[in-house]
Image (cartoon, rainbow, N blue to C red; front, side, top):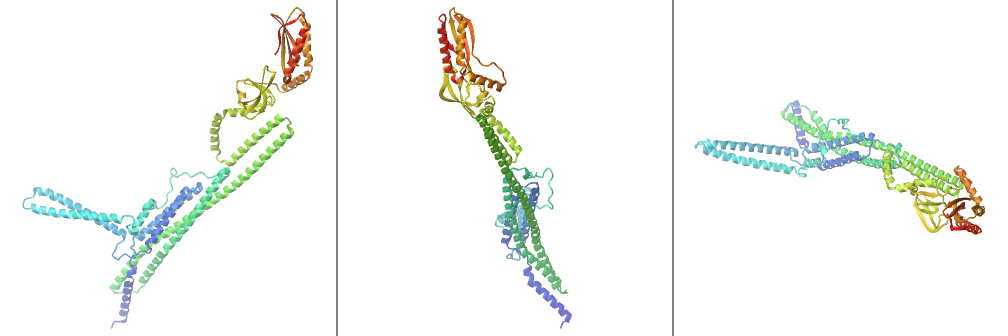
Length: 623
């Protein structure tokens, strides 16, 4: 019968051996996560990474948001690499259905590569041996030659076998590396090829780019100097960016929940390993070598299992911290965009209010101008000119005010307006000249409706003076003062005012012209009484309208500040070959010129016929 102490130690050792034997299958290395969960998590992380980098590159950002975008890209790529670290750590562990003596997929690939390299090395050695034997055969003796030949044949067979083995191993390696055919490791390689950034080594720290290499941040949007168009565009752009960032925040929350789901089984497995390790460490000591060996194997297995599980848990924990940091950066960016949105909206409302108030002020000023013109300007011609000037001024003011309200880049606008103005000036030269000439035509000494003018040989009365064209009612007849309407309207562009051809018109306020009647007389009678009677006949007719002509003359003198002699009928006598030539000049009203010429001609002929000693050499001529 064994002593009590030895019996207790034996029982403890037997219990430890039984514990190790019972837990050995469970401690065998196996994956804590299913393959489909790992692949699905990798795909979700890749999609999230691509969305984050695309948003960081495409979203409008100023100098403040440029730093957030750079940090966002760095955090996203580090989180992606940590996800691949997790997947590779899990792929290095055999699956639950893998036999005990089966190697992991990466180890199998390495073993196949090593075997192929050994077969290649053996083929090279056999080839070198054959070349050595071929060099010895020509100098070999007859006794050793058969042995060398047999050895060469044997080495040749080994060479062929080594080459066949090498080729078979290479084909097998190529078959296992085909996408989709290498298990979890092959799927990880396929996904890694689709994202080249994940294969890059993760830097220890993100160095700050040099000043010459750092990308220049886009200029900040200045809402206080922007126009309505720029503010509206900024509001819609910032609103879309905020919506996109909100979608990214939701996507980041989904990735964070997926990370927590994967960390659950790993955390449980790690706790189980720690719990069992503490149980083995707290087991009673034993002097039995078998129990000690079983305890050592148990601790070694727990250590290997701890390293495998912690190798997968560490990337997930670090990735979780990066995901949370990335989410905070997204929220900070969205808040910054929210501030920009609020500022742009406030300035847009301010610009809209200023535009409305400005338009009300302009239209009120236009209405006051119209009423003042209608009340204080009695001349219809001047009134029409003031109203036309009002339309031009108000239209230009509204156009300029709208441009200043809607446009943001005044420098670009000025450049564009300069080139546009040059092209318009060349293309619309005649139109521009017509507009400029209009202001000359409606000036103080300009053309009025009803004036008789002569332009380019065409005489007519002004019907209308437009902004671009001048309309005349054509007059025709045998002389300049005996004219009558032809029934046609002649249209001239106002630009003709700047042409070399002269424009003739009556002085403002004067509606009379000078006429003359010439008589050539022969005879010996005294011409003085005849001249006096002829001049008296003309003065008698002139007395009927002389007051009107003199009043017009005084009005013209006051307007032009020019002093000239009052118009009166006058006579001139000149000696010619056939006798005497008497010319009588007299003013006539333009609209009665034909009538007055007829009456004066008749009176002059009657006076000549009263003197029998005088006779006309040729008929009287009125010019």
